Length: 262
Image (cartoon, rainbow, N blue to C red; front, side, top):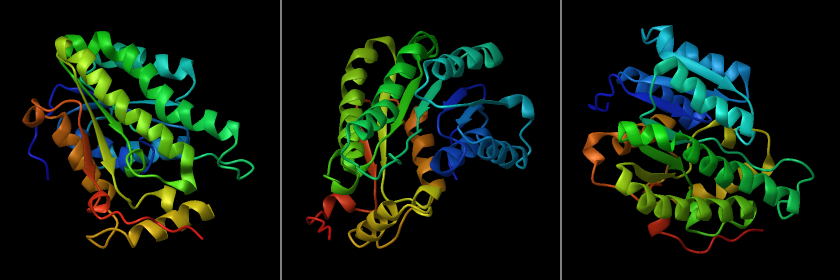
């Protein structure tokens, strides 16, 4: 368990109605932070709330926003309502993601727009909205990226391309925001046991089966492990780290023979 103390801190976590984001919301709450959680699923948001409340955290330290993170109205609400409820923002975690689901053509222009909007444009928009508050708190930003940002993923090609953009966003904004006292880093989780890989979509399941064979540690990660990495990156222990892509992938990127897709 992390030994960091986030008492008095305020954390926004997009995509926290399940998976890594949900685990992060629970962990930061346990470590003393007030949290704004977000998701598209009302049921998922309630589940995250319940998990936090079960640890004895008072409901006054939880705020939620439901909606599509690519919607500018939702983006604005995330920032403004967090400040209205908690008075500050210390940590912004851009964790929301998704894969294109429509006609199954992962290389359509519709798929490209979807991937860029949710993976790259939404984090940039939220960051710009949060900068004035993060400057006051000397806070930090964490973006959830993926090994596909550094290693081709022909199954989810536009997601891979967008994640590469997200990685370079972190590097560029780390340089831009450092004079303001704001750190920016990306966490690149490897294959993690989340609803995304346990769902009904054949291409996601196929990718998971292929990737697990390439992981030197021989297993997929738990979302709670990724939450611990986020807590470290956000903590004072990592105060000298910015502009980095932190790979927590079981060794996937260091052992990367070409994946053969049938």
